[in-house]
Image (cartoon, rainbow, N blue to C red; front, top):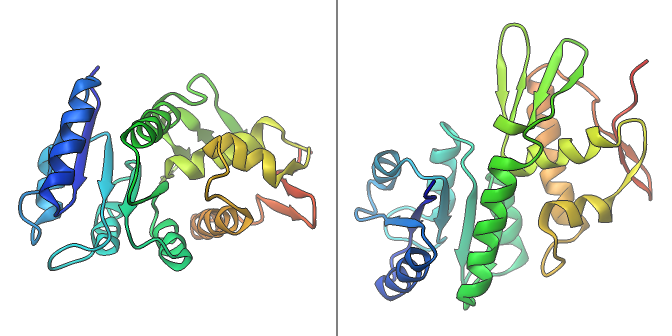
Length: 226
């Protein structure tokens, strides 16, 4: 099945180069054409993954990330020359899954896309974890209750998968980072903390309190069944 990528980038040279490279690797790559109506283009494309620049005409990438996150947990990669740490933290807070700095190597971008697609749509697809009245289903990035469901981003789903697979045991921060990104090029404990803060708030808002425990100077823990 061909993966569909949606690219939001106002530098047409970069658009052309990325589209050509991804097409050579068997992917479809649609690009935004109206930067006042990016969300409309996104809905028409129905992509498997979104690549967003931060600096765009009319509205920046953070704005469009928020708009997409209102309706979808599709994997999102920020691709930007605005590479200071605050922009990286903001991107993750908005719900992005990766942040790649410009200038970049096409081989690195492709590897990140392939890894994120693989982990987003295949990770733990045969497993379901039950706790209290809830079920966590990694295959569809979702927590289900008898009356409702909670969509998760791919990163949030992977964090829970790592913790549930070791339920009752402390999982070191480094192990979670390695499992999520399989690299340490810009990921650190602060980046992981941002992801966990977002996930905990989402769980609390859904009525799931204190699921993930912090063990000081050691890591994180989901307590075993009592």
